[in-house]
Image 1: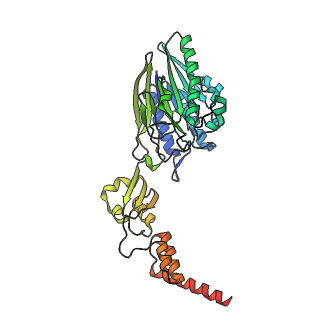
Image 2: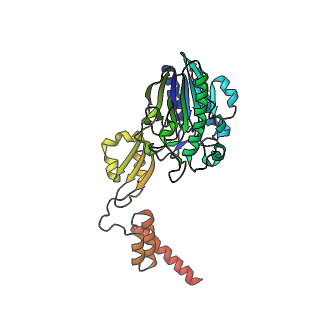
Length: 388
């Protein structure tokens, strides 16, 4: 049996203000193409279908279209809710939709009720754990210790109990697949994920997933292999510049009567490249090796000793999709602006204080014209105060 592990679709998300709905339609095209060409039996979505609890109408329509296309391509679909999803809204109609091949798992009491698929003399039980917020489920699971690890361990104990009963009663081998939306120990985060907890209380040991044939993880946006049978598929699109080096796609999993047979990384082309550029403004604008970045989304860090004027405007003439601009001076030239504290200590008159503030905020010295303007404004204020 062939399963395709995906997660973290984040439908409706933007990228530093740039809309991604067209790009998300594109990855769904790739997903459907993969399902068709590789004859996928079941598509797994390990949480964060949507980017927010109340997705827009067009976003819901996109997910609806994706589900119809996947079913028409011959695959059934198992979906669990993530920390970005509204579990109640995503899980609406779940019992009815199961009859049509869409298996939704968004509630704790569904975690130990698998979607079961039969093929070639064996069956596969897919247990989909929704995102488990410890404060909401700890009491129901009988857990006293804080954090995600104890509640996930308790939920998996219920899964193991059900699995043991099924295997004992089954006339054919039963492979077990678990979906979980967690921060597993050893996983590498990117800046586009929302933290699940603080102080390490969100980290779940990989050892909690021992004994299952495959564990399809969601939450972290980079593809990662924590064990042969425990993996993150990663998000299908990059959602931060920290993912500039990622390849995006899904994980193809083959199961047989003997358990896990084959795992393969499936890569999908990126709709737009990400460029993380650093250097002085004039050097970046004149570097012919950066021609590829002219068609990319760009994050630029300027290292000029003094903040250049109209930096964003000048960058966008060459790199029109510059979305993020930062300044990290790597050296100050002789005569460069002093710190605001230095200027305040040295200022002998109100004009010096004002010039120091402008230079501190803008990281560039005031021009002669700007100094004259400040002098005129201060003079007018002083005259008004006297006349009052």
